[in-house]
Length: 261
Image (cartoon, rainbow, N blue to C red):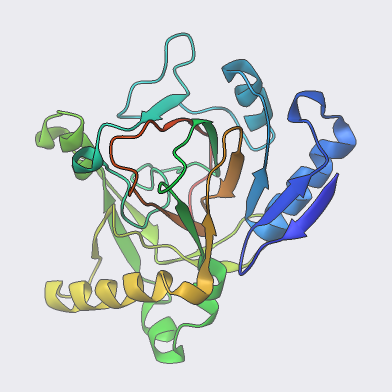
């Protein structure tokens, strides 16, 4: 097994068949995951059961609180192309932050991919925090953001009255590395608690723009058989479209997590 660093975050792990991992492999994968935050494994051939088994390296496979999983494997969501009009992930986010214990890791495995388009961008939120201006860090150090699932609920045909909200720190401490990361996502955050609405929106707009700067980003172009695993505690991602009506099918799985602090 070899490792190749890719940019401001992310690394490609080569010379490994994930169907044939041993304890040493798994220990290294976990180490690299904490070091690089995003891991890419090319040319894999994984059935849903193998994908779930690998995910237990980070926690228990989670059933998504809104979207239904595939038959026989409720923890795995199939992401397919229904046209750009219905593309729902063209925004920067960490997964399922509207839960009290958001997932630690996401695994995304490509089954069918187009030749062009469909890239996924990943942004390093450790660096985003580190490069924030001192005054902003000081002002928001102990503030919390309100996260809500109302957007995905309405998207799935649910009743907005069933929407729920949770509060998470704007700056999250990673429980394993001890490093701080910016933790606000345009997809799910509604406001900053305990400041006036106008000030909240202005600061969130600034934080969103800051978090997605090009210098923090690794862009992944998908090939069939790619498995990408990322750390939701310190990474945001953005799924581009740009592949028209071409077929694109992925399997997505998230793992259990812990309460942000």
